[in-house]
Amino acid sequence: MPELPEVETVRRGLAEVVTGRQLKSVEVTGTRSVRRHRPRELARRLEGRAVAGLGRRGKYLMIGFEPPDALLVVHLGMSGQLLVADRADPVPAHTHVALGFEDGSEVRFVDPRTFGEVFVTEAGDGWRPAALAHLGFDPVEEPPGPAAFARLLAGRRTRLKALLLDQRFVAGLGNIYTDEILFAAGLRHDRPASSLDRAEAAALYRSMTSILREAIRRRGSSLSDMQYRDVRGRPGGYQSRHRVYDRRGEPCTRCGAPIERARAAGRSTYFCPRCQT
DNA sequence: GTTTAACCCTGCACGC
DNA sequence: TGCGTGCAGGGTTAAA
Image (cartoon, rainbow, N blue to C red; front, side):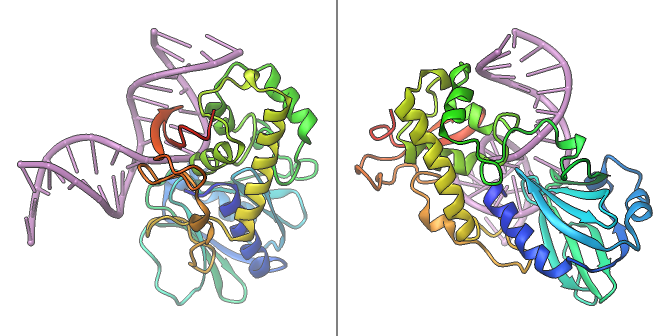
C-alpha cells in the first residue's frame, strides 16, 4: 500500500519521463477512478497541454500542466500504480485511465481494488489546491521542526497510532511506516499523544523524518506481488529494513522478544512489547 | 473531541 | 482440486 516514500518514488520516476511532454489524449475506462468527474471532463481540461512539473503532498501526487493553473491529482489508494509504457504495449488488467503523450509513450493508472482516484483541480497558490487543504504537514517537504511538532502533540489526547495515521495531522503516513516509526522511537501505539515528554516527542520526530528519508532512498517498500511498484514496474527495497511490520512472532531485532500484533485505529499494528513503552 | 464501525473493492491465504 | 470465507487496507462518513 503506497505511502509517502512510495508516492515520492513514483513522483521522481514520472518527472523524468513526462516533464515538458505534451498530453495528447486522456482515455478513461474505469469511471470509479474518476468519480469526481464526468468521464470526458479530464480530456476536455487537459488534452493538448504540456506537463510543467510533478509535485506531492502526503500521499497525493500532482501533475502540473502549463499554463500552471491545472493539476491532475492522483491518489493510489491501496493498490494503485502509475506505469509508464509504450502505447503499443499490452494494457494490463484494471487499467482505468491512460494518459497518451505526443511521443507515443503512455502513463497508465492501474488499480485492481479501485480505492485510488484521479481528479483535476485548480493549482492554487504554490500548488496548494483547495481539494488538499485538509492535509496536515508533509514530513519530508515541510517538516515543522521538533519544537513545533512537540507543540502539535501536546494538545492531543488521541493515541499515537491513530494520530500518525490521521492525514489531517501529518500527511503521508500509512500502516507500515507508523509502526516502523513508533518502534524506532521506542513508543507504544496506544500512548496518548499528550503523554509524551520532551525527549519522547523529539525521538518520535527524529524517527519519523529519518525513516521516511531512508525509505525514499531505498525507493519504498514492496511486500508482495500485488503491492507497490515504481513507474517501470520495479519493486522497492525498504521492506528488508522493516523491524516490526508483518513480523508477528519473530524476534525483535533489538531485544529478541517476539513481535506482537494488536488492533489499533482499526488496523493491524505490530510492535515490540519490551522495547516500546 | 475522540473512538469505533461500516463502506467501497479485489486478490489471496486458509480451511474443509 | 475447488470452493467458500475472512482478511487486508486508505479515506470518508455516520454513529456512539
